[in-house]
Length: 294
Image (cartoon, rainbow, N blue to C red):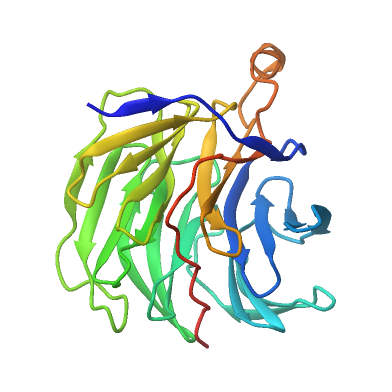
């Protein structure tokens, strides 16, 4: 039986994103980044000073990976783009697929420097999405027929990959080649969340191998052991928690994005913090995201 913990954290950013997603942290600059996917905006927050900046995007961006001090990689509905940090200039890098009705969704960099990124239908059409592996400029489709691909994260040694289809609510695991981030086995179900409230959404894996998973529709971040045992639930003050990220100089804090997407006026009134970005307020043994290796 897992324990449920009340929210003891704080609001990191009061801006209400329609679809806050894709948070990450760059320890070299002490900046957290996240997207409002449908708002076509990249949010940037310098943690030490709490200085906030927003960057308008010409597409639906959802994943950001640091390449080097000068460049970032952004995954979007129009493909992958290199972004120059100094002025925000975007340069096409790669294409994921040929389905114009799709957009990008979840993603994370594997310890090898390869990127996993997912796509889905713009209206969450059944089985329209997929998960891809990007190594340099080489794109490989890993898994298809997924409705809402989420939960992409990796064990500390890179030997296990995790993901989910939020529509099905099965948290999956698959054996990987630690040197490449490519699967060497068949995905297996780690935890069956069918019929439980909320949807298994974005996730990160900490230094001890624990999986921290945002639970869309349940006001929570759930914690799983590598064997799939759920050991804790940490409440957040927004129903649609979407994705966590380790932040801070020691990666010992947890940022959580949320969304107000799909809410009517009454729903938004009942969930006044929907779309805001939070710090969970509990110590974690996090890890910094690897840079994407060109």
